[in-house]
Length: 184
Image 1 (cartoon, rainbow, N blue to C red):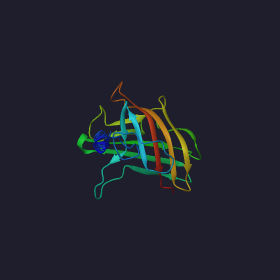
Image 2 (tube, helix red, strand yellow):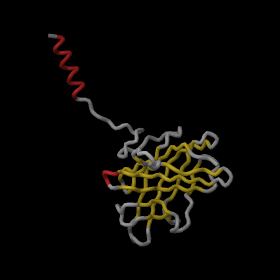
Image 3 (tube, rainbow, N blue to C red):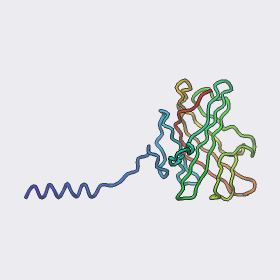
Image 4 (cartoon, one colour):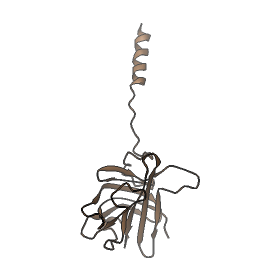
């Protein structure tokens, strides 16, 4: 009798297991954890919805994070891409920094309404391109900067606009990235 009770409890435990998404996986619906190890993660909330750099692997396919750090000019560029076939989405978010020399808070490089922050390649937003504006939020907090090891991580937030879509502002919040960067 005791074996039946113990066996029944064990079966209930197995059948009642709750599935939890691993935040460090490449799940495009869960923000990645804030890490500082060069794990090649990038995520944020775009107008309150989770946006994670993600490209399903295909032979000859692109990568979800691309860019570089120029150790001479101190210029940093990171482009995160998200392609989710079943949602008909293909977008990118770009971070640009000048004079990056150490951990700290930086304003993103902004050329008034000419530097793209978000590009929508498949028409899911009102406009296909949204730009940085000097009057709006556009900050990156670099938390780990180890160019000799090729590691950079931090958090960011920004507001993006397009003059062709008046009143339409893209608000990016809770941004975080942990990238093994290319250093020149």
